[in-house]
Length: 285
Image 1 (cartoon, helix red, strand yellow):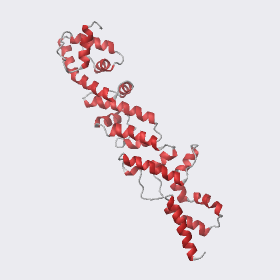
Image 2 (cartoon, rainbow, N blue to C red; image 1 turned 120 degrees about the horizontal axis):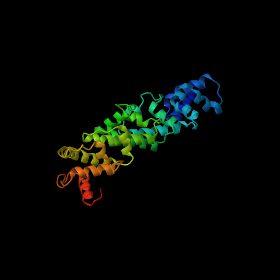
Image 3 (cartoon, rainbow, N blue to C red; image 1 turned 60 degrees about the vertical axis):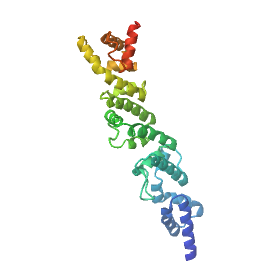
Image 4 (cartoon, rainbow, N blue to C red; image 1 turned 90 degrees about the vertical axis):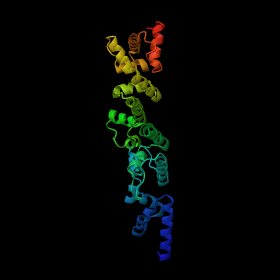
């Protein structure tokens, strides 16, 4: 091949590869052309066998094993770009989506592609983990780390973007952390089991206002119980009365008994106590 033709062919190959973001493969492809007699119709198949190509699109092998079709270079790169846009828009560290080597695979993106995770699902994962835990009061993150030590203590992002963790499982852990974190905000502690139980019936806002009320009335109720030589109500009993969980009726009866005729004692401090007094006067206990 003449020098001019050779340079023209190299330029053509480089432009074609650049169109799909694979400029760094140009040398390997040219070596294939120079050193082997490969019919045109087999060229695409031979290119896909190049080590540099298989490394760059390594998730395709995993996709095939999982029963998904392999993506074309254009589809693969387009999906990576969608992932990157989402990760960048949510302010996630570049280590998840930036590689200095254009032919290197990116582990986080490869996992997502191999598991056939679409861009919308990735965004839902990030919203669940990052927006609802990492960007909330620190007590939320403390709670999720306490309840679920398998989640990296310094990097919840790695957990929520990993496809092996089901979105529903992420949501349930986030919900429990919101309950536990709300309790921590007011100096209260609850177990993982209790947090998971309450997360099924109480919203984040409801948990926060409820635990605030409990933190306000608990010392006063304890004082009244001491005056009346009654056993103080436990936190779980106050939670039952506040959130309507099992034992709520009995807990409300105890509150009414302790409060007795002290109608002004809890004025303005808790709707829970005011409600208990109102029901007591109405004969509902």
